[in-house]
Length: 263
Figure (cartoon, rainbow, N blue to C red):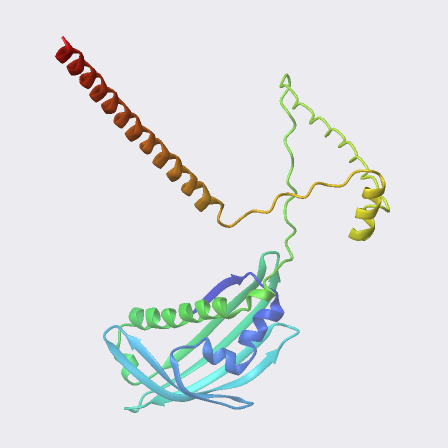
């Protein structure tokens, strides 16, 4: 079985994932209970074929790890956890720099006996293919984003020339210059003098600033009182006029009676 895929990153970034045994285990989710040392990986492998599942206990030994050549090779062997069947495999991973990144080729050669012999060969191949596809996805996801491949130069952007006969854009008129601010006249020494000196100088010149009349706090009350007094005076005047009219009427009547008796 073989898979070829491209990672948009440099070979060094990809090697940092597959060239380290710890990183390689993270890319093989079917391996459980891993035990890693300098020479290889001991683990359990779960293989699901159709509706059946077989668990193998074994080891992957590191045979070659050439970072300069971009090549890593592992040989594995194991036996059924519940049975007498055995399995063996050879895994070979090669990295090659490409214009679009790094091309990764994974090739697996496997053989087995025991329960696996009773399964459909095509179903066994599909089960192995699923393991490889999960490996490809894991490697692609674990490559650091900051080490992404940038060897491809971006295409230059060409600006389109204006069509013939088109009206050119009107030039933007330059901004009118801002007139300079009028200079502020300097303060005279007299304005900076002390208040007493300023008053003395103003008196010597024959004039003095008239002080503003003080504001009496009871001014609104006085105004109301004066209005009330005026209203009272007007009322008394009206009553006095009414009394005078009544007295005049009585006098006229008395005179009239007197003259009538004399007749």
